[in-house]
Image (cartoon, rainbow, N blue to C red; front, side, top):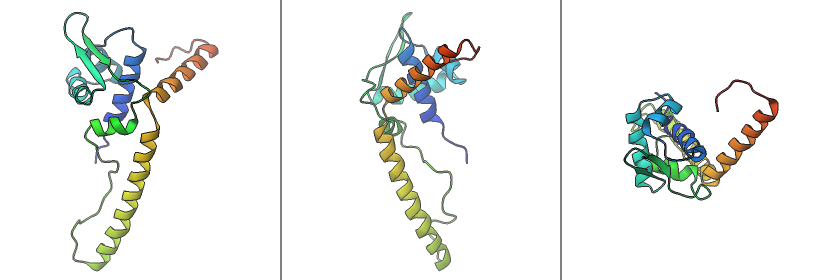
Length: 152
């Protein structure tokens, strides 16, 4: 099963948008993310519906962050993306008649539920402001070390 990297991509895009001096076009964001502008527009559209970003048309148009970074959590972003599955593993058969498989499913289901609850709780504690502060700290450290020729 392919991993869903939309949350990681959205966080990447939002941090670039935070650092930008104005709106960022879908084309510019697509270059930052190594993807297609259509993918960016589709994903940003979900965030716009959630009130996290806004978009403007025209020559100075593009995407802007509309929400306060201190209030937007990873959990909210995960929800805005449609709550993609956390795990690529699961039960072999959801409705088994075999008692052994029922026991296996019960153990796995319980574990997955607890792990997902733990992830969601942690996602509720991390804000975009936390990520922006971490980026700023890393950027300042990189600048102190001198030019390395690496992208942000």
